[in-house]
Image (cartoon, rainbow, N blue to C red):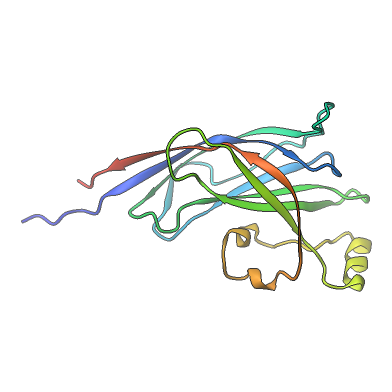
Length: 182
């Protein structure tokens, strides 16, 4: 009697980071990466990416438009650890240093079809006025060494204060394909 192989399924994510609204900032760029569980593995496409620098639109919305494509395929044997996309937005401060302007994460939609997700962005802040002044003066604002911590539960308790500000937009279109083990 033959033993049954475990069945796997594929998750194909095809979409784009369309735009964001950061009213007080201009000339921003975006980075993305995926966070997923142990049973998940990328099989095609890019897990990380960085966009071009964009300026605000001249209309009333003053949107920052990236239209940054995302195309990646994952495989897994179970849905635990469903992939999340983590966005980090960066731009220049008054001294011309690149500083983080926002972090955010959202799960890839569970159902096939067209989806539009609004991702709330936040920025870590220094806990004291002295730290705020020092970080401003040195041009080194608080930021994560690994932005993936935004999508994980552990390690976030160290975040003393966060400012919830603006929204970025993504429109991933996932498709699930079930493949039986052979």
